[in-house]
Length: 149
Image (cartoon, rainbow, N blue to C red; front, side, top):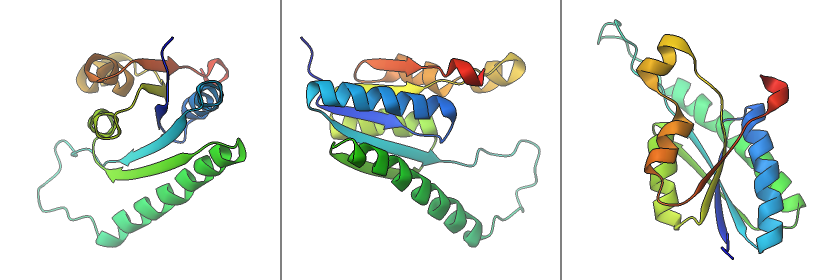
C-alpha cells in the first residue's frame, strides 16, 4: 500500500481548497503523514496596460501579510487535528509553485481543490489543477466543493 507521509495542500482560501484540506487531514491521520500547506500569491501581467504602471511595495507587503495570516489559520486546523504541519508562502505563479514545492519537499501526494474556469478564460489561462495534474512529480488528488458550484 502506498504511504502518504508528505502531503502537499495548495491553499487559495476558497471553499474548494478548504474541502481539500479536510480530506488531506483525514489521509494524513490514516497514514501518519505530515501536511505541507502552500499559498502562492501572484499578480498576472495586465494585458494592454502600459509598462509605466508601478505597483507600490506596500501593496505586496499587504498581500503577503494577509495571505500569511490566512495560511496560519489553516495550519491551526491541521495542528488541532494532532498533525505536523509546515507552511510555504511564495510569490510565484500557482501551478509552478505547486510543482516546485512538491519536488523540493519530495511530496508523496498533492491534494488540491479545483475551481472550474470556463469559456475564453480557461482557453487562455488554463487551469491550475489541470496543469498540476500534467506536470506534478507525484499523484494529485483534486477535490471539488459541490456546494460552491
